[in-house]
Image 1: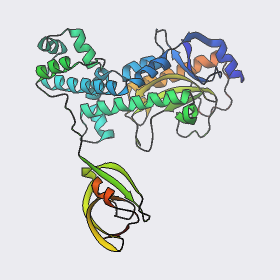
Image 2: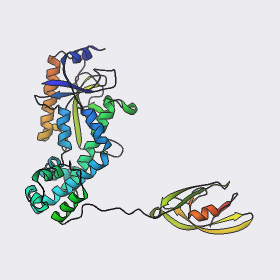
Image 3: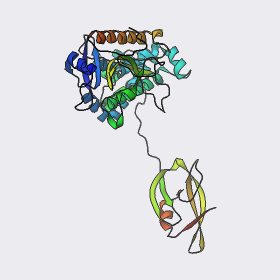
Image 4: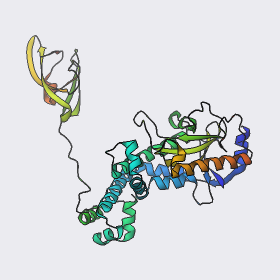
Length: 187
Length: 175
């Protein structure tokens, strides 16, 4: 595994967004973007999870509508990520990411974190990006998923993402990244 | 710089991503990409409903399988010719031209009689009548007010020529 520096505010390296790369040519953000921008993959996912989609979107949802909504949300989220990473219009990565565990109130080092395109217009976002918080406005992105269940363990895609988060956290700890008061050390 | 930042610099793979540049390019073609995506989703839905393969679609359109792959991946920069082939092969309409709604002059008239003009969609307004006094003489004109808002001075809609006929100072009373 390696970590690539993606981007950040000018002259503030190493602050900004990093991404894990698991032996591929593409880092986790590139892989995620490729998946979320592929109508064929998203349509297949929606077809295979129509029953769960009905529970979150409502009974009248169709595969076509869900695919369209999810792909629109993906674009919003990627744009938010880009703006936050570059601190455009006062945006910050630590405004976008929240602790993965909703019970955690404070931001700490090596914290498992999640981000979504939640807004006044999108109360119930379906997409998540996952990252480890290293320091102020510094995160290592580990992946992302369409989250249709309450617990990450309940679906294969999010369970896999949880494993990735834990593995990256362990790798970072082994490299010497320190954490002071991680309340829910899941590794 | 914090200790964690120092460590990050040491474990940096050294590879630099072009993600940001790629995003900037994508943002500059946002609408075209969105349309290509919507067409892709529509085509995938039709293929699934008809249990039709992408290879069959390519044959019907008389194009390569690779071109159909580009279409369903939302990567096709459509020409009218390709849209025509796709519509003919599937027997559906994928593209329509929206005809703009008629508009009326939009006048903001205040008690001092100053007027500014712009336009408003016809479907957003309804007709009503305003009586105003011009040099002590009552003048009645038919105007239009925005639906769902209460008509009030300073926010009236009327045909542009009516607005231009109101001379300052005009006192307006709602009829």
